[in-house]
Length: 140
Image (cartoon, rainbow, N blue to C red):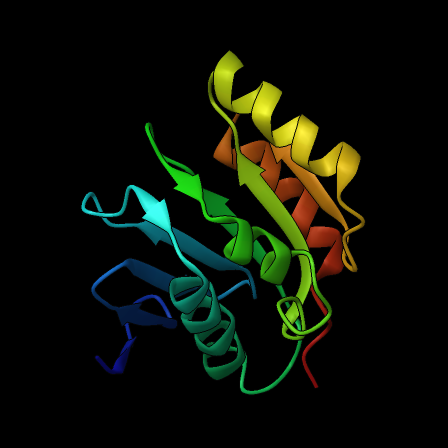
């Protein structure tokens, strides 16, 4: 798949088999999983990291991730997410955690995983974007 540009909103959009990624005009990347993804593998997470790099043109970017029900990460994908390589294009991670079960799992992950970038869970997309705005680098 290719990256397209929406001139009306100044967004760049990538649509792939496993996820859609939007670079919003304010400088935040949003990751939206497709309905077919139930388990995120290492290969998918490597693709996510590479697409963040492409959309951000090699710069580190703040990233918002919307989770969905019945979704898990393999151990290899989880290790990659927590690595410097997995976060090489990510400045900060905000994740939508909209129910108690996901919140418990996510907080367990955060507590026992040393992330190389700031990471935080949110109940709403709006709160997540507000937090991520502090990481947006001024445009030159």
